Image 1 (cartoon, helix red, strand yellow):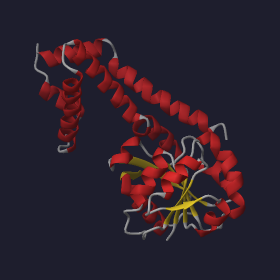
Image 2 (tube, one colour):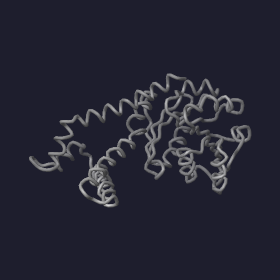
Image 3 (spheres, rainbow, N blue to C red):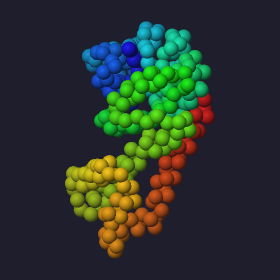
Image 4 (cartoon, rainbow, N blue to C red):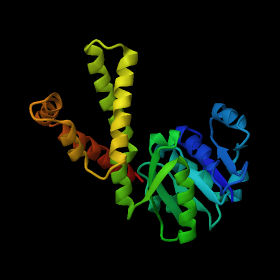
Length: 268
């Protein structure tokens, strides 16, 4: 089996690196193409990738094509891609917004998987939600899942609405976590801690909290109750967040990302 990754940006190369470790693929069975000469020079130095510079040469050779470009590049790319595709190829799109229907119309391919990854894929801790067109067989779905799981975990969702929704939760979610971490680090600095100590205090707190959550089945609310005691310091912090409607603001932010993903889809 051969895979072609179109787009050698952060996520494209992340998936290419992950897939290169898959038992499904042999050495140099991952072709990578990008319009940036600088990026392709970087790819060419990676011995386990087959750097490509022409769609006509690599598209017909691929069993799976992964599209990892920005949505605003998609229409032009698909026009270039269409003359070289073959029915039976599976196309995986990790672009936000563009629907399976639009991808089918632009490329002429029937077997399309729409996926939404997130940045922790870079360290093998990613979460990718995905949905496939009905033409993708069960065996092909298992192959897709195997490839996506090389960067963390994957979740198959019922329909494309959930892809847009997962954009608001897991796709954009790491930025919300970083936002919270940044605010906590700034508070630590204001309390007099050094930048290095502030970073350690915050990062280890997040790491530990996530590990606790993952090792048990109780809810975040239950964990908060375990940490907070009546009239204590933690309760004072939680009361402040509640009074300032921090929870509502976080949900509003997630829905803003969700709504924007839906808007992007309407552009095609």
